[in-house]
Length: 233
Image (cartoon, rainbow, N blue to C red):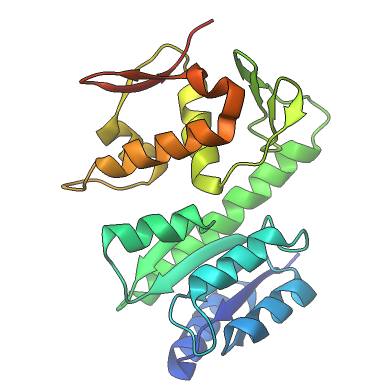
């Protein structure tokens, strides 16, 4: 079955270039020039992946990303942000509101096609695992239960909503209780960032995660001078 991509990009030449190359890679590619048009197109077509420009004439890509994640018709779509903003904080914000990947302009078209393909494949594998008859292995730390296939999180049996970055951070920590992850490791594995980046970003998001976990906040421990870990039962 042909896979679909929606491109939300107000520069028509860029949109056409991406459409042409993605169609050559086997995708049904369609585009929209504004955020509002893009959201409507995504909800109607139900694509596998959205290529989303950050700077749009009517709204920001961040807001479009939030809308897509908040709607059940598009909550699980793959989102690749495409933008001229390359600062670390911009990338972090994009990932925090729900983007799966991030490419900075000017870009190499082949890289965008490869990233879209990889994202579509990853999501297809996740859905296949979710529909398989074999039950998924739920990760447990204290009152926290996390299903890595369905992405459900429960605390004391009660469903809990986490932001995408909070979920990724929690999943990594509870996947190996007792192991200490340095801030640099967390940046690399959760944010996919390396190099000289302010690791205070990690501290801010750990604090936010603890707030979201409420009564289970103490399941995430600070190891002073080293990093963070999930408490071993």
